[in-house]
Structures are given as C-alpha cells and as structure tokens.
Image (tube, rainbow, N blue to C red; front, side, top):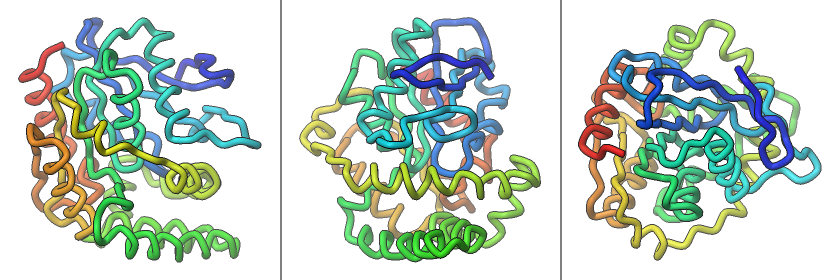
Length: 274
C-alpha cells in the first residue's frame, strides 16, 4: 500500500479499479482492516475507482498515541485523504464503527460525500437495546484489561457477530487463517482508541434528519436485535433510505455474501451516479 501524510501522521491506502471519476471510498469497521477486500475485488465494481485505506491504528497507519483521534478527527482523516488524492466527490461505504465516521463526514463536508452506505452502524445511544449491547462489550473490555486477549477478542466477535456461530470459519475463508491472530494485535486500537472515541461522540440528529443525499442501509437477516433496532432508527432519520437485505447473514454480512453486497452496491451507485 502507498502512504500519505494526513493530519500530521502516515496513513496507508491503495487505489484500485478503473480510472474514472466514479469514486467509491471504503471505510472499514473494527478489528479487521481488510474486511472489504472480498467486496472490493468483485467484478461488479470494476467500473469504479476504489479507495481503500487503513484507519488510524490499523496496519501501518499511525496516530498520536497520547491523544487518540475522535470520531470527528477520523472523519477529517478520511476527507483529507480524499483531498490529497484529488477526489472531489465519492460514494462512501462503511461497516459498523466506520458508519459513525461516515455519518460525521457527511455532516462535515457534504460536497465530498455523494452517497452513504451504512452497514449496521453501532448507534447504541439512540436505541433501546443500546445499553445492553454496551454491557456485553464491557465484558470484552474487562477481559482485555486482565490481559486475556484471545478471550477478549472472541467475546467481542461473539457479541457483534451474534447470529453466526461459525464466524471464525468465515473470517479464515475470506481473509486467510492468519486474520484472527492479526486481529489480536489490533485490540489496543479497539479498546484504547475506538471505545473512548465512541463514548465521546456527540451526533446531532437534526443534522441527520436534514440529510438529503442517497443513503443505503445494508442489513443482515440474522443480525442481533440491537442492529435491527438501528436499522429501524435509520428509517426514521432518513425517510428516503434504501435498503439491501442480506439473507442468512448477520453483522459479518459483507464477508458472508460479498457477491450479493457488491452487486447491491453497484445497483445503488448506478441509480445515483456522481
């Protein structure tokens, strides 16, 4: 991957696909920085220019350890990387935690965000099951503090990928059998950067309700009740919301059926060309 100096720190990225003005920017979720590779590599997206980058704390992307970036700063990171690559406008695709970054980016610079794809963002503070979801993740954090990294990661993934018992097999198949071990080294980023940023993030729902850009919600049929509530919330925030249902899938949906997700994205992009 290439590197760019963004907000004072090295950020690694790659540009793939066709050389066109139809840009798609993928923002990965927690733990697995290459989780979108199976989707990005699909031939359905071959006519698009694709920007894939590793967020702060992932891969060789650095950040200020003494002052971990907030959600707002992670939004700035994405937007400034686009600016450095002369990407004037793009479809933004996000999974889970990255959905918060994508929403913030749409508020911070609506001229750069042509459309949003949200794959079950963890909007815990806005739904009834959010508190219970947070308590489950707190157990994962406690295991991390005890130095039990394997148990912590396993606990975390069982919570977020509830509805798919064989999540480990899916990860190994799509990302390689070293992906889980690599994820163990990311736990510091998850618990020392992302958790604090999530707790501090304040999102103005009036801003959300004023958004008129095309928005796609991708949802798994077997996802936890928490994520189902989030999808209903998105429908109230965005009456024009479009949905893509992934059958027999949970929160790991983009790795369970990358072909369906890629084709669904292409269909959405083609309905809302840049």
